[in-house]
Image (cartoon, rainbow, N blue to C red; front, side, top):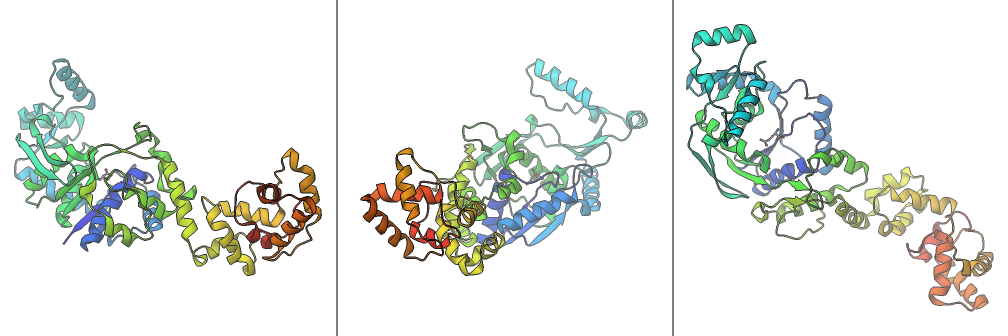
Length: 439
Ligand code: GLU
């Protein structure tokens, strides 16, 4: 049985980078027929907000990535305390009192001497009397997990065989001086208790994984399979971290990106398979294999989402957009015809409004100088609406007869005059939608 989790911290909106993690976990779970847990990593009471927890759920629902269960770390503090006690009993947990400034100084000294900036375990030498004294002066200490200084090895689902020397990593802090449990411990307890079998997350977590493997073992848990996907970069390979704020799922949604466009891109970007527009999540599940992904950073260009969105829209049946069309004020007897005319000519749904306004009020005509007289003459030959499916053919035949123009020289100036643009739907379909005579 495959059990996975997507574990965002509700300290902000989720972005495309988070989506990659969510989607990979979701797809492997659905493919294997397992349980997908949404876990809210909310052990930081100051930064975690209900508003963000709600937003995360809303964003996932928008995409159709449904979870089987929600868990909150803030509900499980007793369990983390119990795990902490277990680690103390096993001699793997020690209290330290260095201030951030002291730690910083130690790191600088080590770096100056060409040594890796690994915590020196000075606190292990403190006697009980020393600790009492420090506690009285500085308050409670923070607690570090004592790593076994050996190589930590695992076969990563994406990165292959990995080996990290625990001696090159600082003993991780699991409880802060103010008593707050840190993610590293909470996550391990949850992964054990919820029977997590596969963890897919960003490659920024590789060192965490090494230390978490030892903590899981110390607590007597089963180590899950790990896979670390590459991080996203901008189109030029630039770091995306600073721009991720503008790549939140809600921003993309507000810009009109369609869920299947986003999911189709993210399920393939960075893999050896080409991006293909899928019509359903089931189709994505079918074609997904995490083994196709590589370690190289993955370039993400949000502009790629728009052609895909346009294709999603052009495939949508009228029923799927009936509400959006009605909301524009399109009368119901024209709604279907309106959609059939615009579906191939919009990038995002919001573009429909421009077309409806054009049909309702007319366009600002686009007339080339040399066509002025021709267009004026042609428009004078166009009767008042309503127009039928036959109106365009009748009108252009009459104009051809009167002016001698034909082909592109006949049709293009009329298209530009009526719609204000050089491209768009079949004019025979456009005319019946016009509520006013053009010009
Ligand atoms: N809350 C962590 C994060 O968002 C979860 C990492 C994990 O998947 O363990 O980075």
